[in-house]
Image 1: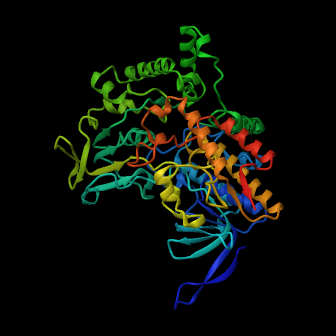
Image 2: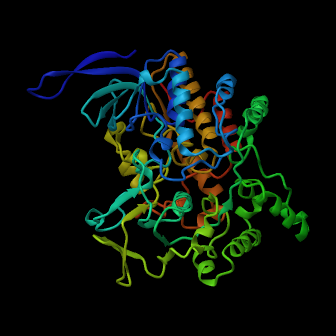
Image 3: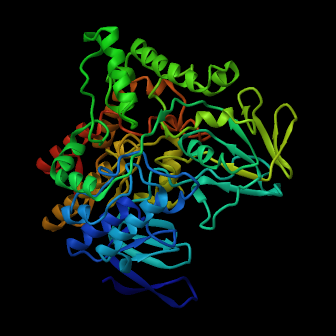
Length: 550
């Protein structure tokens, strides 16, 4: 339980009660739920806050048609309890959003977490007080809270880009952002629908609503390499088999490049004959997962020739599915960037949607969207595409957006939003110099910002943060802050690692290219989740060098 103190609200105003905690957690998604559980287990008084009306994080907000994760159910899991793992049986390999939301509620109920979560509450500001070494936090309802530690579990894709086009408020039909989807189902039957955006989210929406719509116009700017998903149902017997592998899986995912149970084990590209390479690519293509991207040949990330050969292998698969129609192939198959340097979506008959007579792909490179008008979408050629419903699958301010939308101020009143508007920096995505006792998960410059099976990397960060807080408390200290030198060294290592890859040569949300004015830096550490976890473990073993503990 927290304690109550009083605070003068201002001159001439009465004192107001201020709840005081050892720690405050922002967010009740995969990371926030586990962070709350760990801190409570340690005996800390802790309160979590979430803008939503229930738990789930991204799986609460992203309830758009077709939403599902692309990590297999057996590894999209919590690893701190074998009993918890076995207590829930997924229905299929890649469960859809409603099931995932139910699973996270199951976890929260099993651990009795909801009593310590305040829903329907947005954290508006968090200011560090140097005299008391505590964070002073204000909610959007004016409630004031203070805590020694502030742990941000806000999510890496939780700051939707909502006002993307001029005139959105003038549209007389219905308009929806995929990241802010309503709980009430949207009726697409027989409607004229526009979908703006063909990233992973847009693809899921398009393939799902295509059978219902009267007509659909898809506004395509950046084509995607896609992989066909194989999504078999899971029986009780199937899940029992995975449960029997709990400890092996738990260890395995922590060691691999992207936190999955597969890794790059095909051997060097140069050692294979062309026939052997093709056979390996075919095997991973047929797996129906992200394995072709994250377990075939790592050289695709570094070597332009290998990248082109792998990319051409995928392009040939996509051309065949589009019946080799030149118009669709030109618009929907990438040629100006390599496979895997963008986020690779899994899909289910997505390309075949464009072969429907009632579906039109609009080339936004030739005719960009100019504005939204009352009747629909106006493109640069002056044409108005009249529609009844607009679905905006236009993405997020990834990694940094959720934190920079909160007024976070550290030592000397420095503003995180202002700092990150100039340059996005962190110390391993765990702290930011100048912000004592602030810890972050899913933040920039860690694998969890994009390049990881999220539960793997988020749990690792939560465990590391929790163990660090326990260490600080055992030492009888009250403040911990990453040093400038340590942060500088990590940023340099992050940039040097990224510069060796082709990812930094590609415009994508990985590089912040989707947000006007955002500083260009790879949002996620690309040295591998396994490597990152080993570096974190070494810090803990050696007494946390690089952190000022006082």
